[in-house]
Length: 368
Image (cartoon, rainbow, N blue to C red; front, side, top):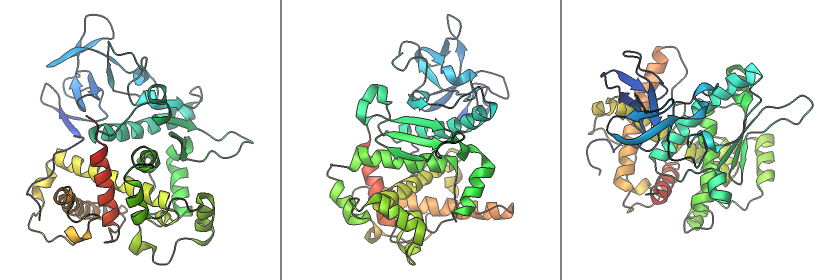
Protein backbone atom coordinates (compact mmCIF):
# COMPACT_ATOMS: atom_id res chain seq x y z
CA UNK A 1 0.00 0.00 0.00
CA UNK A 2 2.85 2.36 0.78
CA UNK A 3 6.62 2.37 0.84
CA UNK A 4 8.51 1.62 4.00
CA UNK A 5 10.09 4.24 6.20
CA UNK A 6 9.07 7.79 7.19
CA UNK A 7 8.73 10.60 4.69
CA UNK A 8 11.47 13.18 4.32
CA UNK A 9 11.12 15.81 7.04
CA UNK A 10 10.02 19.25 5.94
CA UNK A 11 10.94 21.00 9.22
CA UNK A 12 13.70 19.31 11.27
CA UNK A 13 13.41 20.05 14.98
CA UNK A 14 16.75 18.81 16.35
CA UNK A 15 20.13 20.27 15.41
CA UNK A 16 23.79 19.82 16.36
CA UNK A 17 26.31 22.39 17.49
CA UNK A 18 29.84 22.24 16.08
CA UNK A 19 30.84 20.85 19.49
CA UNK A 20 28.44 17.95 18.95
CA UNK A 21 25.87 19.03 21.56
CA UNK A 22 22.19 18.66 20.69
CA UNK A 23 20.38 21.93 19.97
CA UNK A 24 16.73 22.87 19.88
CA UNK A 25 14.67 25.29 17.82
CA UNK A 26 14.44 28.02 20.49
CA UNK A 27 18.11 28.00 21.53
CA UNK A 28 20.21 31.13 21.03
CA UNK A 29 23.37 29.78 22.69
CA UNK A 30 24.80 26.29 23.06
CA UNK A 31 24.49 25.11 26.66
CA UNK A 32 27.65 23.03 26.31
CA UNK A 33 30.19 25.34 24.65
CA UNK A 34 28.32 28.70 24.87
CA UNK A 35 28.60 29.25 21.10
CA UNK A 36 26.10 31.85 19.87
CA UNK A 37 23.38 30.28 17.72
CA UNK A 38 21.07 31.56 15.02
CA UNK A 39 18.27 30.04 12.97
CA UNK A 40 18.68 30.48 9.22
CA UNK A 41 15.29 30.39 7.43
CA UNK A 42 16.93 29.61 4.09
CA UNK A 43 17.97 26.14 5.20
CA UNK A 44 15.70 25.76 8.28
CA UNK A 45 18.71 24.97 10.44
CA UNK A 46 20.01 26.29 13.74
CA UNK A 47 23.68 27.16 13.27
CA UNK A 48 26.63 27.92 15.51
CA UNK A 49 27.84 31.43 14.65
CA UNK A 50 31.32 32.75 14.05
CA UNK A 51 32.17 36.45 14.47
CA UNK A 52 32.06 38.47 11.25
CA UNK A 53 34.42 41.25 10.14
CA UNK A 54 32.46 43.97 11.93
CA UNK A 55 30.36 44.18 15.09
CA UNK A 56 26.96 42.45 15.01
CA UNK A 57 27.87 40.47 11.89
CA UNK A 58 28.24 36.72 11.79
CA UNK A 59 29.53 33.93 9.61
CA UNK A 60 28.30 30.36 9.38
CA UNK A 61 30.72 27.55 8.66
CA UNK A 62 30.08 26.12 5.20
CA UNK A 63 27.54 28.85 4.29
CA UNK A 64 28.43 31.76 2.03
CA UNK A 65 27.76 35.35 3.05
CA UNK A 66 27.49 37.44 6.17
CA UNK A 67 24.51 37.46 8.50
CA UNK A 68 23.02 39.63 11.21
CA UNK A 69 20.55 38.89 13.94
CA UNK A 70 16.92 39.92 13.73
CA UNK A 71 16.35 43.25 15.48
CA UNK A 72 13.92 41.47 17.82
CA UNK A 73 16.70 39.39 19.34
CA UNK A 74 17.13 41.90 22.18
CA UNK A 75 13.39 42.48 22.72
CA UNK A 76 10.82 40.45 24.64
CA UNK A 77 10.37 38.41 21.44
CA UNK A 78 13.86 36.96 21.89
CA UNK A 79 14.01 36.14 18.18
CA UNK A 80 16.99 33.92 17.34
CA UNK A 81 16.51 34.14 13.54
CA UNK A 82 19.08 35.49 11.09
CA UNK A 83 18.92 37.51 7.90
CA UNK A 84 21.57 38.06 5.23
CA UNK A 85 23.49 41.26 5.77
CA UNK A 86 23.04 42.23 2.12
CA UNK A 87 19.25 41.62 2.10
CA UNK A 88 17.50 44.53 3.77
CA UNK A 89 14.14 44.17 2.02
CA UNK A 90 12.46 43.85 5.40
CA UNK A 91 14.76 46.27 7.18
CA UNK A 92 16.35 44.81 10.30
CA UNK A 93 13.68 42.14 10.80
CA UNK A 94 13.71 38.48 9.83
CA UNK A 95 11.05 36.94 7.61
CA UNK A 96 8.94 35.96 10.63
CA UNK A 97 9.09 39.27 12.49
CA UNK A 98 8.55 41.28 9.29
CA UNK A 99 5.03 39.84 9.18
CA UNK A 100 4.03 41.94 12.20
CA UNK A 101 1.88 44.95 11.40
CA UNK A 102 0.91 45.85 14.97
CA UNK A 103 2.44 44.84 18.29
CA UNK A 104 1.28 45.84 21.79
CA UNK A 105 2.73 48.64 23.88
CA UNK A 106 5.91 47.04 25.18
CA UNK A 107 6.36 49.60 27.96
CA UNK A 108 3.78 47.52 29.80
CA UNK A 109 5.70 44.47 31.13
CA UNK A 110 2.59 42.28 30.93
CA UNK A 111 2.21 43.12 27.25
CA UNK A 112 5.88 42.38 26.68
CA UNK A 113 5.64 38.97 28.33
CA UNK A 114 2.50 37.98 26.40
CA UNK A 115 3.95 39.23 23.11
CA UNK A 116 7.09 37.17 23.66
CA UNK A 117 4.96 34.03 24.03
CA UNK A 118 3.05 34.88 20.85
CA UNK A 119 6.26 35.37 18.91
CA UNK A 120 7.63 31.98 19.98
CA UNK A 121 4.48 30.30 18.69
CA UNK A 122 4.55 32.34 15.47
CA UNK A 123 8.15 31.42 14.72
CA UNK A 124 7.25 27.75 15.07
CA UNK A 125 4.40 28.29 12.62
CA UNK A 126 6.45 30.27 10.09
CA UNK A 127 9.31 27.78 10.15
CA UNK A 128 6.84 25.01 9.32
CA UNK A 129 5.26 27.01 6.50
CA UNK A 130 8.72 27.61 5.04
CA UNK A 131 9.50 23.91 5.38
CA UNK A 132 6.32 23.07 3.48
CA UNK A 133 7.42 25.65 0.89
CA UNK A 134 4.18 27.59 1.16
CA UNK A 135 4.21 31.26 0.14
CA UNK A 136 5.14 33.48 3.10
CA UNK A 137 5.56 37.20 2.44
CA UNK A 138 4.58 40.35 4.33
CA UNK A 139 2.04 42.72 2.86
CA UNK A 140 4.80 45.29 2.42
CA UNK A 141 6.21 43.00 -0.30
CA UNK A 142 3.24 41.06 -1.67
CA UNK A 143 0.44 43.61 -1.34
CA UNK A 144 -3.05 42.11 -1.22
CA UNK A 145 -1.61 38.59 -1.39
CA UNK A 146 0.69 39.20 1.56
CA UNK A 147 0.30 38.34 5.22
CA UNK A 148 0.22 40.54 8.32
CA UNK A 149 -0.28 40.04 12.05
CA UNK A 150 -1.96 42.43 14.47
CA UNK A 151 -1.28 41.57 18.11
CA UNK A 152 -3.78 43.58 20.14
CA UNK A 153 -5.07 43.80 23.68
CA UNK A 154 -8.55 44.93 24.65
CA UNK A 155 -8.40 48.42 26.17
CA UNK A 156 -10.67 49.57 29.00
CA UNK A 157 -14.00 50.77 27.65
CA UNK A 158 -13.30 49.39 24.17
CA UNK A 159 -14.91 46.41 22.39
CA UNK A 160 -13.19 43.11 23.02
CA UNK A 161 -10.45 42.27 20.51
CA UNK A 162 -11.52 39.18 18.59
CA UNK A 163 -9.00 36.72 17.22
CA UNK A 164 -9.62 36.17 13.52
CA UNK A 165 -8.57 36.64 9.90
CA UNK A 166 -9.64 39.09 7.22
CA UNK A 167 -7.97 39.73 3.87
CA UNK A 168 -4.56 38.48 4.87
CA UNK A 169 -4.52 40.17 8.29
CA UNK A 170 -4.52 37.83 11.27
CA UNK A 171 -5.57 39.45 14.53
CA UNK A 172 -4.64 37.77 17.79
CA UNK A 173 -5.89 38.96 21.17
CA UNK A 174 -2.68 38.80 23.21
CA UNK A 175 -4.66 37.64 26.26
CA UNK A 176 -4.66 34.24 24.54
CA UNK A 177 -1.03 34.08 25.70
CA UNK A 178 -2.19 34.27 29.34
CA UNK A 179 -2.34 30.61 30.33
CA UNK A 180 -5.04 31.07 32.97
CA UNK A 181 -7.33 33.09 30.70
CA UNK A 182 -6.82 30.71 27.79
CA UNK A 183 -7.66 27.70 29.97
CA UNK A 184 -10.76 29.45 31.30
CA UNK A 185 -11.87 30.13 27.73
CA UNK A 186 -11.19 26.53 26.76
CA UNK A 187 -13.40 25.22 29.54
CA UNK A 188 -16.10 27.83 28.97
CA UNK A 189 -16.33 26.91 25.28
CA UNK A 190 -16.13 23.16 25.87
CA UNK A 191 -12.96 22.72 23.81
CA UNK A 192 -10.65 19.77 24.27
CA UNK A 193 -7.68 21.68 22.87
CA UNK A 194 -6.78 25.37 22.86
CA UNK A 195 -3.21 26.58 22.43
CA UNK A 196 -1.41 29.60 21.00
CA UNK A 197 0.08 27.51 18.22
CA UNK A 198 -3.36 26.07 17.51
CA UNK A 199 -4.75 29.59 17.06
CA UNK A 200 -1.98 30.49 14.64
CA UNK A 201 -2.47 27.32 12.61
CA UNK A 202 -6.23 27.79 12.44
CA UNK A 203 -6.10 31.44 11.36
CA UNK A 204 -3.35 30.84 8.80
CA UNK A 205 -5.67 28.23 7.32
CA UNK A 206 -8.13 30.99 6.43
CA UNK A 207 -5.31 32.91 4.77
CA UNK A 208 -4.25 29.96 2.65
CA UNK A 209 -7.82 29.25 1.65
CA UNK A 210 -7.79 32.71 0.08
CA UNK A 211 -4.34 32.14 -1.43
CA UNK A 212 -4.55 28.56 -2.68
CA UNK A 213 -8.24 27.66 -3.09
CA UNK A 214 -10.50 30.63 -3.77
CA UNK A 215 -11.01 31.14 -7.49
CA UNK A 216 -8.71 28.26 -8.48
CA UNK A 217 -9.33 24.78 -9.84
CA UNK A 218 -9.48 23.62 -6.20
CA UNK A 219 -12.56 25.73 -5.45
CA UNK A 220 -15.31 23.44 -6.73
CA UNK A 221 -13.72 20.29 -5.25
CA UNK A 222 -13.55 22.18 -1.95
CA UNK A 223 -17.28 22.89 -2.08
CA UNK A 224 -18.05 19.28 -2.89
CA UNK A 225 -16.08 18.11 0.15
CA UNK A 226 -16.43 20.85 2.79
CA UNK A 227 -19.63 22.56 1.67
CA UNK A 228 -20.55 25.84 -0.01
CA UNK A 229 -18.76 28.72 1.69
CA UNK A 230 -21.36 31.15 0.29
CA UNK A 231 -23.58 30.12 3.21
CA UNK A 232 -24.04 33.23 5.36
CA UNK A 233 -20.97 33.17 7.59
CA UNK A 234 -22.14 35.44 10.40
CA UNK A 235 -25.49 33.70 10.64
CA UNK A 236 -23.85 30.28 10.68
CA UNK A 237 -21.57 31.25 13.56
CA UNK A 238 -24.46 32.76 15.54
CA UNK A 239 -26.46 29.55 15.10
CA UNK A 240 -23.48 27.46 16.17
CA UNK A 241 -22.89 29.46 19.34
CA UNK A 242 -26.60 29.52 20.19
CA UNK A 243 -27.57 25.92 19.40
CA UNK A 244 -24.25 24.08 19.37
CA UNK A 245 -23.05 21.53 16.80
CA UNK A 246 -25.27 18.90 15.15
CA UNK A 247 -25.64 15.66 17.12
CA UNK A 248 -23.51 13.69 14.65
CA UNK A 249 -20.72 16.24 14.36
CA UNK A 250 -18.05 13.88 15.77
CA UNK A 251 -18.57 11.49 12.86
CA UNK A 252 -18.16 14.14 10.15
CA UNK A 253 -15.86 16.83 11.53
CA UNK A 254 -12.50 17.02 13.27
CA UNK A 255 -13.93 19.35 15.97
CA UNK A 256 -17.37 20.62 16.92
CA UNK A 257 -16.42 24.14 15.75
CA UNK A 258 -15.61 22.75 12.30
CA UNK A 259 -19.32 22.03 11.88
CA UNK A 260 -20.19 25.74 12.09
CA UNK A 261 -19.38 26.68 8.46
CA UNK A 262 -17.32 25.29 5.54
CA UNK A 263 -14.63 27.93 6.13
CA UNK A 264 -14.27 26.81 9.75
CA UNK A 265 -14.23 23.17 8.70
CA UNK A 266 -11.36 23.99 6.36
CA UNK A 267 -9.45 26.03 8.97
CA UNK A 268 -9.86 23.42 11.72
CA UNK A 269 -8.84 20.60 9.39
CA UNK A 270 -5.91 22.67 8.07
CA UNK A 271 -4.72 23.27 11.64
CA UNK A 272 -4.83 19.54 12.33
CA UNK A 273 -2.89 18.85 9.16
CA UNK A 274 -0.15 21.20 10.41
CA UNK A 275 -0.28 19.50 13.83
CA UNK A 276 0.19 16.18 12.07
CA UNK A 277 3.12 17.26 9.91
CA UNK A 278 5.04 19.06 12.67
CA UNK A 279 4.53 16.24 15.17
CA UNK A 280 5.82 13.70 12.66
CA UNK A 281 8.79 15.94 11.80
CA UNK A 282 9.60 16.25 15.51
CA UNK A 283 9.29 12.51 16.07
CA UNK A 284 11.46 11.89 13.02
CA UNK A 285 14.05 14.36 14.29
CA UNK A 286 14.38 12.26 17.44
CA UNK A 287 14.34 9.04 15.38
CA UNK A 288 11.18 7.87 17.11
CA UNK A 289 9.60 6.81 13.81
CA UNK A 290 12.13 4.00 13.54
CA UNK A 291 10.02 2.18 16.14
CA UNK A 292 6.82 2.35 14.09
CA UNK A 293 5.49 -1.09 13.25
CA UNK A 294 5.21 -0.94 9.47
CA UNK A 295 3.22 -4.17 9.45
CA UNK A 296 0.58 -2.67 11.73
CA UNK A 297 -2.81 -2.64 9.98
CA UNK A 298 -4.02 0.84 9.10
CA UNK A 299 -7.75 1.53 9.48
CA UNK A 300 -7.70 3.61 6.29
CA UNK A 301 -6.97 2.67 2.70
CA UNK A 302 -6.98 4.31 -0.74
CA UNK A 303 -10.76 4.11 -0.80
CA UNK A 304 -10.89 6.55 2.14
CA UNK A 305 -8.89 9.27 0.38
CA UNK A 306 -10.29 12.34 -1.32
CA UNK A 307 -8.93 11.01 -4.62
CA UNK A 308 -8.13 7.27 -4.30
CA UNK A 309 -5.85 7.24 -7.34
CA UNK A 310 -4.03 10.50 -6.61
CA UNK A 311 -0.24 10.32 -6.78
CA UNK A 312 0.03 11.62 -3.21
CA UNK A 313 -2.07 8.76 -1.84
CA UNK A 314 0.70 6.36 -0.72
CA UNK A 315 2.71 9.09 1.01
CA UNK A 316 -0.40 10.45 2.72
CA UNK A 317 -1.40 7.03 4.01
CA UNK A 318 2.11 6.69 5.37
CA UNK A 319 1.66 10.01 7.19
CA UNK A 320 -1.52 8.68 8.76
CA UNK A 321 0.22 5.47 9.81
CA UNK A 322 3.02 7.40 11.51
CA UNK A 323 0.57 9.88 13.04
CA UNK A 324 -1.60 7.22 14.64
CA UNK A 325 1.46 5.39 15.96
CA UNK A 326 3.03 8.48 17.49
CA UNK A 327 -0.15 9.95 19.00
CA UNK A 328 -1.14 6.67 20.61
CA UNK A 329 2.24 6.52 22.36
CA UNK A 330 2.16 10.21 23.31
CA UNK A 331 -1.35 9.89 24.76
CA UNK A 332 -0.15 7.05 26.98
CA UNK A 333 2.91 9.07 27.99
CA UNK A 334 0.65 11.98 28.95
CA UNK A 335 -1.58 9.68 30.98
CA UNK A 336 1.49 8.27 32.71
CA UNK A 337 2.21 11.80 33.95
CA UNK A 338 -1.41 12.44 34.92
CA UNK A 339 -1.82 14.98 32.13
CA UNK A 340 -4.64 15.37 29.59
CA UNK A 341 -4.24 13.46 26.35
CA UNK A 342 -1.55 14.81 24.04
CA UNK A 343 -3.99 14.49 21.11
CA UNK A 344 -7.59 14.56 22.42
CA UNK A 345 -9.29 13.88 19.09
CA UNK A 346 -10.53 10.92 17.09
CA UNK A 347 -9.63 10.80 13.41
CA UNK A 348 -12.92 9.67 11.93
CA UNK A 349 -13.11 8.09 8.50
CA UNK A 350 -15.12 11.00 7.04
CA UNK A 351 -12.37 13.44 8.06
CA UNK A 352 -9.61 11.56 6.22
CA UNK A 353 -10.59 12.77 2.70
CA UNK A 354 -10.59 16.37 3.96
CA UNK A 355 -7.07 15.97 5.32
CA UNK A 356 -5.98 14.34 2.08
CA UNK A 357 -7.50 17.19 0.08
CA UNK A 358 -5.48 19.69 2.13
CA UNK A 359 -2.37 17.56 1.64
CA UNK A 360 -2.92 17.75 -2.12
CA UNK A 361 -3.47 21.53 -2.01
CA UNK A 362 -0.27 21.99 0.02
CA UNK A 363 1.76 19.82 -2.35
CA UNK A 364 0.39 21.76 -5.31
CA UNK A 365 1.08 25.13 -3.64
CA UNK A 366 4.74 24.47 -2.86
CA UNK A 367 7.05 27.20 -4.18
CA UNK A 368 10.53 26.60 -5.65
